[in-house]
Structure formats: C-alpha cells, structure tokens
Image (tube, rainbow, N blue to C red; front, side, top):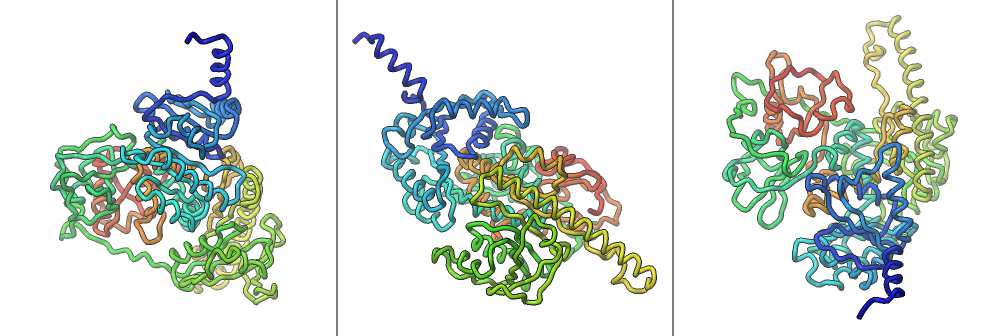
Length: 581
C-alpha cells in the first residue's frame, strides 16, 4: 500500500520521540540511564576508536529528547568534554524490562548489553529490577549468549550477586557497585598513590587489558614471555575452557589454544619481539645480588569518617587486608547505640566476625573542627571508654560518601571534610615536630625525640561521585580522592568489551587474589652495586617474588608527570640508574 500523509507523519513522530525500531546487530546496548551513563558512553567510544567508531543504543524510560540533551551538554562541556570519536549513539524511549521494547532496540542481536541500575531506587529495589532485567533478556532469546554476547549487570548489594549468577550463569557478568568501590577505596586509603595506578589500568585512555593468541610463543613459559612484548605487559593466561590464570608461576607454559592476557594501549598496538633479551637479571648468582627486603606489617590504625549502607561489608573487607591487632575507628554523627543494629541491616547481615580488627566508636561531625581535635572512644551506651586518638595517629583514613544525598551534595560535604582534616593534620604535625625539635635540642641522645623519626600524617582518601568535582579538587589542593563512578563506569565498559576481564578485575580488588601494590625498587635490587638496569630487568627481578611489574615512577617525578611510565612504560629494554624511593 502507498503510505498516506498521516502514516508518514506518524513515522516521523515515532522517530522524533524515540518510538521507532532500531535495526542493528553487533551494537552495544545500554539499558536505563543513571549518573554513570555518560562515562560509560565515553569509555565505549574510546574502545571503538581504533575501528573508526561503533554503534551504541540506549533504551531508557526518559524522553529521547532529554537523553539527547544530556549527551549534547556533555559534548559541549568546557571541562572534560565527551568525545564520541566516530561512535554513533541512538536513543529510544521504553521500558527495558518489556519484551516489545527490547525487540525495538534489537537486544537479541547486540554484541553486549549493559544493564545499569535504575536511578532513585533503594538498593534492594534496584537489584530486584536487575533480576527481572536479566530474566527479560533471557525470555527474549533463549540462545542469547551462545553467539558470544553477554550482559553486564550493575548491582548495589553483594548479597544479591548469587541470584543473577543463578539465573544466567553463562551470560551475565555482575559488577557490584558498592563492593568494588569499597575494595578500591580500602586499597587506596592504605596506599593513596595506588589511585593513580588503578585509574590508569581501569579505563581505555591509557593501557587496558587484552587477550590474544600468539602461536609463535607456544611452548614459552611465563618468565620468558615477561620480556617478549615491547609495547605490552604480560600478566597471565586464559586456557581453552575460559579460565584465567593471573600472575602464573615462572614455569607455567603457554600452550596451543590458550591466550595471553596483557596490559596494552590497544588491541593492535603490540606484537611479540624476536626474544633475544637476556633473562639473567632474574637469576641469583655471583654476579647478581638478590636482596631480601622484608615488608613488615605492624598493626594499623584506620579511620572511617561517615557511614555507608554496606558498612558491614566494608569492615569485613578491611579485616582481610590488615594485620592482627589493628584498630578501626568509626567516626560519624550516628549514636553508638544505633550502629550495631545498622551493621546488621535489619537482619539482612550476619554479626561481624572479625579476626584482625578491633572496632572503636567515636561520635562527632566531620566538618566541625572542635569535634575533630581529639577523637574519644565511646561504648554502645555512649559512655566514654578512655580511648583517645588524634588525626595524625592514623595510618589511613577514609571519608565515605553519603548514600542518602545526591552526588553533588555528597561531594560537597566530602570535599569540605577533606580540606578541614588536611589543614588540621598539617598543623598538628607541624606543632608536634616543633615540640620534638625543641626537646631533642636539650636531650640529643634520645633518638625517640629526633624529629626525623616522626611519621608524616596519612593522606585522607575521599570518595568523589561526580566527575565535575574533579576540577575543584586540584584547585583546593585535595591530595587524596577516588572518582568512584568514573572507575565503575570504566570497569563496566571493559567487561562489556571482554567479559573475562571481570575475573581479572575481581581478583585485583580481592585481598586473597593478586592485589596491586607500590613497591620500593630496593626490594628487588641492590642499589649500592652501581649497575644500570632496564625496566625488563626489574620485571625479571620481581618474578623472583612471583610479582608482575607493570610500570614505575622515578623518584624525581610526581604521578601526574610520570603518567606514561606508571603502566606499560616505553623503552623497556633501556638501561637506567635506579634510585631509592
């Protein structure tokens, strides 16, 4: 039949309002719209850059024009503008749970589906919605996933992970938002510089994880493969069954049918070299001194400022990291009598069983200097216990975002707390150093009064939700922060591009897996022998302790200046003089 003017008008209206069908295949589909959507789009665009761009489709309950306006605002932003790099983004309005709307965006023929948490939902509501989402995708096409497609599911509560994995064990990759950020924050609070390293590894801007097959390396062991890529860092293998071996043993042999996992700038930016580099630096013999630097771990004092819904999970995670007899102080405005009940989460959480941590409660406001001057321990009834501690006595400090507030409101309060606490700690440290200097002048024989023995205060680590806050952090000289939504968005995008990356990232953030550390170079070599070593030599030395060296930071450079060296540095075979620190 010949279309009438009225039917043509209806079709145009459908296009304008986002009701028409998208006829695509091999595209990335994003379901729902929340505060991570723009960052996810940016990361997918970066991933598609080497191919000249790609296709991304977004299905959400929002009006098509509203989503397009938000995208355009991000593109036109003065700071960190969105760059699509050739990727086309198509918006459709609809309910992601309805089969008819999933068909409208060709969900069954997509290469990957990203299911984001619906905004303005409680954690349990959001996770229940995600369960229905996965079931809706399975109902749409029972064969979904058999062609290599998969769905990346954002969850809020780690306790709900099992539900998704039970209904879609082969097709769903679960990212538990709070759990991953909690582990990331804990690692960065204890080693603040780690934030720069992990940020470099998470997104597609620098070096990221790739799997590939290299037949010419079949039969080589992992130690040999350590120096076989000029432009990549080998970190593990994936076998024919899809199992990933991260940081394998030196004698673990790369076999036919397996793939090598590397950190590289792009999937086509690296290839094996001729294999002529000497492995001598990894051997202990008369010509090479193999130092043993014991990394002692005394008990730690940790401070959590604020409260999160998953506080019990966060405390349990910290208990896995710290040595025995460590202390965790909880400082917030919630009365101590209510905290135990909150940790149980209305019966949803079991009572904490801590092996290494001793919990201490203190009550006060994180932006009131008077409250922060001296933290005093209280028991569950609110009575003083006699325990006292100052801010500069802590080994690490974590300022938690407020779950109940919006991202900008939470960031504003967190930024204020960081600035006040940094200022107070700097003044406390200067006062204490001045007193020790004065006392040491009168009693120079007492090493305990030497101001050189005074430990510098830790860097308060704050969770920042909104990427727009980042520019304020440098202006305000905020030294410690983690852009949690940005990193989660990068993780979601990486897993959307390659599902097995989820296994890798989960292990990196686990206390029982292959964690990321910043090591002093003197752990691996004798700096007094005057010899020059290349980065590959250091990497081979690190293999003696079954560690993978991914990069380095020269002592004379800060982490921003050393951005290209932190992960997958160039000139890996170039000899240089290494310095302590």
